[in-house]
Image 1 (cartoon, rainbow over the protein chains, first blue to last red):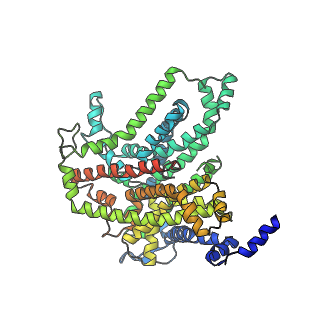
Image 2 (tube, rainbow over the protein chains, first blue to last red; image 1 turned 60 degrees about the vertical axis):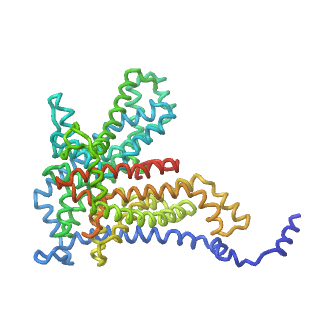
Image 3 (cartoon, rainbow over the protein chains, first blue to last red; image 1 turned 180 degrees about the vertical axis):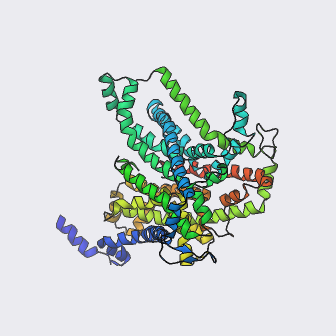
Length: 301
Length: 266
């Protein structure tokens, strides 16, 4: 039987011409792979990572003070200026404090909300809550900052709501920056924490209560440690995004400046110095990621 | 775990409060676009559609809208091609460095926008490329790849590889298989990825600031440059309200199209 089939195929076998390319590619899988990878890798590895690398090189160049042209001579001038001027140190410290505060507040809001979504609501309602939290994430970043400018302004919504309680809007400044950044990046924290709570096996929770732990104890000693990596994963986004932001400070910050603002004001007149300043958030993020990778949170991204 | 009635109520209240805080500012912008008071006094003393009429008739805003559409379409097209290719490579092959592809794709969006912006700005200057629509498209495409990649990869992982083998066994060539088997399976994931990429590009402001020349103004850049002009405020607000509605629609569509569209910009 098998023999006849083979024989038949020998006879009927069509000319290989229509599938010649397919057949060739099928035999040479590495050709397929390099065909698929070449364009994306050219773009991301060469163009994007290349641009990042070039930025670090530029940070070691200087600017001619008269012509504003970039002078391509290696020097540590930009970094010396950064370290010696206290104003830059203050801005850097302020930015790190703001980013940490935003991350902390996001975590404090995200944990109860995510817990509610994953563990209290009936399963068929969960999807609806996830969509409700997610959708505004996509509304324009700029419009969201703008929305808070309108909320916070004198005689704006906050003033009119808080006045009966004898309070007023915090106005534009550091507090406004923290509020708006928290608002902007909160969904980035809620999502991973929600996923963390949802992944948590019921049997662990049951075991804990069988062993006599009450709700609070179970939450603190069983659930929180297991959700912690998700919290850290979320914090990478809230921290990084806050650290590099300058538009929020521009719109609701009053006179307060963050690292991003220093980069932004220098970019036209002194690009090498702007590049040197921009290495601060990158360095802080690298340190942050190095610390965080010990918790295993990077596997959750 | 048994929660007491009180703690359930407290949690529900926190959830409701959280959702209110998320939505109220956006609603305020939409309501203010009809606010008769030029300085957005609250509560609104009266309502008008004047700002919408003036926003629609505003030349700067209309030009910026067209630029935004062009940039969004260009970036989406590039992201679709590159994101799909990368997703196929990761799903169908094993190779050295496969694990790092996801990290590389996510990097442009995980790093602060200003870092990506200044890096691209610097690279364009060094290479002597003039700033314009082209540079904006390049910048946007870089961070849009991730949404297409994630959507397509999620779909590829869920579809069994044996349909491709079946197609080959039945005599289809590689391109026939793509056209009649793989593409129809991917179609809704591609559409969802494209919609999300477009929404991402349409909103972007930081990378745009550093990759657009003075002559190229997208809608968010137009808003930013008019934000501090008091007499433009009501028109800016109407444009902002339009942007809220416009950016939510593609996302809502994408979520209906594809159950893979799990989360956020990640």
